[in-house]
Image (tube, rainbow, N blue to C red):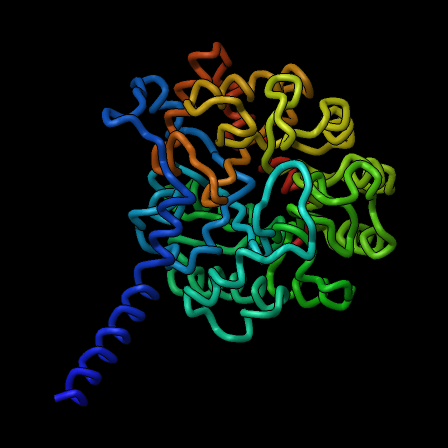
Length: 393
């Protein structure tokens, strides 16, 4: 009898453990990536919807690959997947790979030595063991997932590695296909692990955008949220990476860079960096938002500014707040340098997911923006930048 009881108890433990591994990652994602949509939805008029349906839309930042779900499936959690991006009429989406996040993460100061949040997430998701203790392998695993999805459903998803790939996606969409172009990015250059040879590896895996830092200082230099503060600029290794990226036609992203790192990058000949997901400090005085003068300098070098969708950077939780930040960005840097940088699936709450993106088009019309300006912000500026920056091919 005792043996039977113990056997039954062991079975319950195994079942409980299995249930935890199956359901916990989804529970975590639902908690970290809520959609704060009113019960009745955001109102979108016929004019706004018709305009939205005509737009070529691009977004600089989704962390969907972090969450170990098939992006070809319409998920009931998070913000983006291919079906919802298609519903929202998105033409080009940057999918970034998150590989390390310090425990107690904040906008002011984080230690690179702090306990990492991503390690237990990857273990809980039962990702391959090679990714548990290697930042490089975590990035490559997420890159493989995106490539596998594109290979499985090329009529829905295509990888963009060159200007030719981008144009092929645009031509297909102009011909009536609802294909999504996916650009692969890296959230912080720490998966390079301080070895320039790994840039070859990452480039070969399809990476075409690298955010130099994330929430902590790394081998490339100082983070906006690191221990070094404004005193930590671009390291010698970081300078080597930036110069190599320029030669390869890769996008340099300064979204989490320290002010001194921003200045150092701007001084490099040929550098044309972007801010992929941010707000405007003069409009929303968040520690997450870079100083306005540096934002102007990035735009003056030909870069674009991606406005985020979460309250910490736009100081509010509605489509109107995002639209107001976009208007503030236009006033600061001009209509040719403003774009979308949602930070979808990046452990943030947003007022709408990708399928409901027309709510932003309505909010921009409500702000009095012309259809021409809206077309630039919603994707035109991003597409132009990529067509001028990516390598030929």
